[in-house]
Image (cartoon, rainbow, N blue to C red; front, side, top):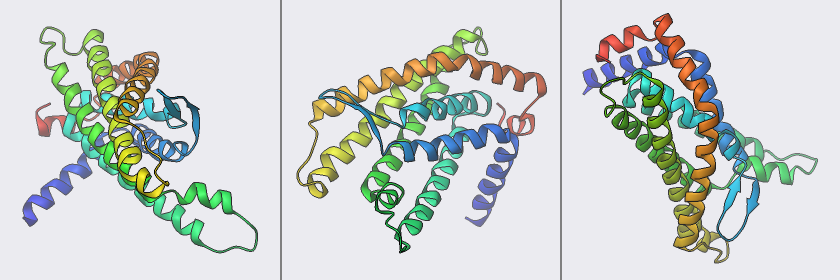
Length: 241
């Protein structure tokens, strides 16, 4: 058991050394920022609800797509666990800061950064689940391109398919947990129907797919620069990628 844990820890250290720090930083920041921006609803109707997190969620999924292509789905999932761990730490610090009494009234500020425990739980479960789905689906779709697996078509198709489905499950799991499980209990009976959860998830995923289509060329450019510069060669050799 100790040897297995030690090997896993060493592998994670190698991975974090291999992925360029800018990508790790942007991915982690996007996850943390997405959690904060999710507190603000920027549009809501009977069939669609969009929160501020949509402004950066595309960056999280684009980073996962790039890392999956370069280092494999398990590596991207490990990075996702790292980012969500940082997010939980930030939320803990925010909660402590909000709980500290002050002479001035910071009620609204404390309410925002203090968060709601079941929303944090729902978003954490949803993101980890969707990250796993996105990463391994991205990898699986990529294996279908046998002639030119490193070409533009392969990257864009695997990114678009995995992003849409991954974002759908992210939205759907969050909506189900928040608005059908917890909200009826803690928000005086407020709830969504399953149809509302499904329709909002599909429409939200389509909007997030549009962001992916706009920014994915930058992800492809990053991958090509990594190939030219030999980024992550040590990790890829150790995993036969």
